[in-house]
Image 1: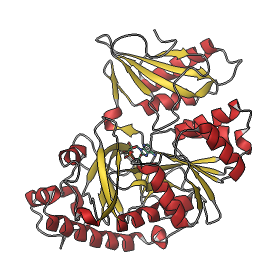
Image 2: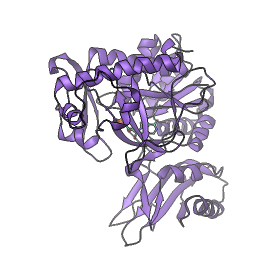
Image 3: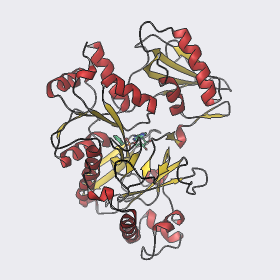
Image 4: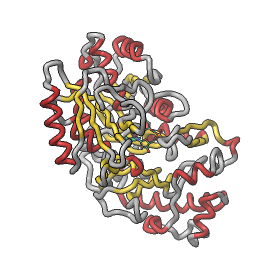
Length: 436
Ligand code: DLL
C-alpha cells in the first residue's frame, strides 16, 4: 500500500517542492544565526532566494563534531519552549548526541514512519510487535508513532525480557515484528530453545534496522522466522527510523523520504558527489524539520543511491543497504575490511549459524583477524566449515583470516541494544572462548 501520494509524485514536481523547501530552510538557518548560518555566510550565501538543488554540492556540510561542540542545545533553531521532547543516541564513539523535536517534528516523524510501515504491508488491521528499545533511543518511540499514524495496533514491548516477548507473540499473534536484525535472530533462537517453532507464530514481515546487516543475514532471518525481512534506515540526527525504508516490492532498495530528507552520496575523502550507483557517504539535508534542521549532514554511513524506476511505483531516490560506516573500516595488515564483508561470507555458508563475532587481535604490531562462528546444526563438521570459510574469506577480502568454529551457544548474543560484532583485543586474556 502507498500511504502518501507524495511517494509517487513525478520527479519534476518533487524537484520543485524540494527547491522551495531548500530555499525556505536556508532562510530559516540564516535567520536563526547559529553555526550553520555562519557557515553559509562564509560560503557567500546571504539568502535562500535563487538557490537550486544543483547548488547543494557547493554549500557547507556539518558532521558529528559540529553537534558535539554545540551539545546539548547549541544547534537548536527554535526556542526551547517550542520543543516537546528530546531523543538521542549514545553513539558508537561513546559521546552522546541529543536531538530535540517540536510537535510538528513528531508529526513528520510519525508520517514518514507510517509510509515505511505501509510499504512493508502493514495496515490499520495490523498488530505491530515493537521490540525496539523505548527511551532516548529513537527506535522504540519512532516506530510507535508511525504505527499509530497508520492506525495499526502497536504493542510497545521495548527490548529485553525475551520470554515475555515470546509469550505475547503467541497470545496476540502480531503480523509485523519491528526490532534490530540481531534481535530477530535472538528471538528465533529463544523460541527454538522453548520448543516453539518460530515459523508458526503468524508474523508475516519484519522491519529491521538500527545496525548494518547483509543479504546473508536477511536469508537467515527469513528462514528462521518464516517471514519477509525488510530493511529500515534512519539516524537520530535526521529524525530517527523512517528516513528510508524498503518496501515489499522495492527489490531490496530502500526508498529515501526525499521530499523531507534530501540525500547525496559523497566521496568520504574529497566530499564531492560520487556518480549514481557508486558507494558514497550518505549526506542528508532536512528540509522540513523545525527544532534541529540540518543542511548537508555527513552521516559516515556508506551506501549507493539509485534513481532507476522502482517496481513498486514509488518515484523517490533509493539507497542500497548500508555497507558500513566510514569509521567502521578495519585496516588489517594494510587491507581495508568492512565487518559487513565478513558477515556476507560467513552467513552465506549453510554450515554456519547466524551468530558470529570478529576479533581484531591488536596485541602485536601486525594485527590478526579471527572470525568466530557456530555450526548451524549438531552434525556439522567444524573443521570442514573452518577450512571452507578460511578460503572464502581469503578470496573475498584478499586477506588471510583465522576462523574458529566454537560450540553452539558460546558466542555473545545481544538481547538489548545494537549488536557489537567486532571485539578488539588489545591486552589481557582472550575475549572469547576458542580464541588464542
Ligand atoms: O538507529 C535509528 C533507527 C532505529 C533506525 C530503528 C532503524 C530502526 P541512531 O541510534 O542515531 O538511530 O543510530 C544511527 O545507526 O547512522 C547507522 O550507522 C546505523 N543504522 C541505522 N539503521 C541502519 C540500517 C537509529 N538499516 C546509526 N542499516 C546510523 C545499517 C543502520 N545501519
